[in-house]
Length: 495
Image 1 (cartoon, one colour):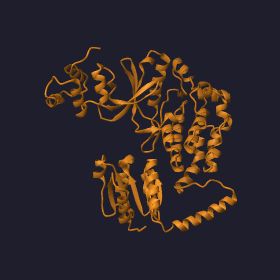
Image 2: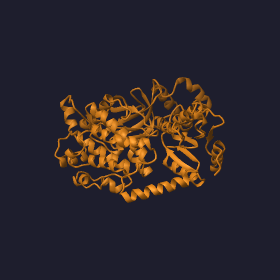
Image 3: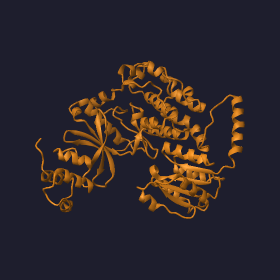
Image 4: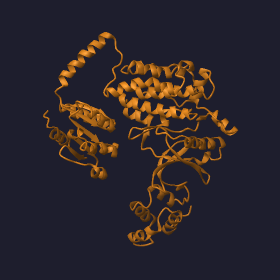
């Protein structure tokens, strides 16, 4: 390809609508001349935020496509798989940040793969639920098929469990309930997922679980012969399970089984199946029959929760819950019990062990009853551990939660669960400052001291926060000793 001049690239950017013509005079003045090099032009455009690095690289390489899909303008590539690429984009009409999934060109001529991709989008357009990634638009830009959807700031369930190693029971149960609610809704709309796995669950930075990728979903009302053929396609895992169970290819209980596999992962921190890229291994029915019992892998879990997951993972379909709605009903008592006691759900124990546990618990209560208490609201597992260890060493009893609204509800009880509330806004953002600001106006909560930890980049959060004698903002970076002194000053405790 012939080298482009700065003038040619600038003209292309204007013609495509990547740069507003009104911005050009100021840009040229900064460069001092229209004879500036391509590098100088590109650096200035990126520095002035007229172009993103992704947009500039495509422009300088002579591309005129791949910048716009439907009503969105692509900002940069956010991820890639063997089937499609995912971009972060911005809606041109309302400036909303969205994700655009674009089918790789080598699959555009493949009728089945192309239809699978578009089918994922069309299925998504039918479904509107907080636990399912919202699809905005499905279409084609030239030869490229695309799906525009909500952008989820977070990670896959697979990544989350890998990083966190294990989730606390409250957090795990919350994620499980969210997934079940979403699947109950989808099944109620006549749609089975058919490809439930950890990489098809996104968990936002606020803890919202969302199902994605309904490309292999089965719809109860088939519209055409082609759609019917697509609907019969199955993943290796679903095909192996259904062959072993002797059921047809769109059995709703298959979703129940693989939902059970997700719950097993959430509650134990490990997959019930041996990890393998080998198709033959994944197609072996023994892989789904020889699952190590959840109670053995995670003996700390309550017996009734273990029983629910084990029943979902029964190889014989008749022994499973017959619908996801039944799973939802079975988990309700456990969920209610967890809501009553945010810290632990005691597993079933032999009588002697129960007696020892009661005695040790009473001893612990006597030892900790005089300790000042601090409730920490933080999403990051690493930060949770750091804060817990630091304040514990300073003589505090530390309670940790990831949900700021839940923390606020806890403080409405008598007696209050802690002497001070510490909220971190680094991930929770406005949700943290909303709870922080809710304390002072409340006749009862106004007596609760609170600290809001922010980062240097969160100037909007700092401005939004309402400080007074009992509620203060601490901006990182700061010394641990400074944070400790703030806590002591606000609570008046000495440790």
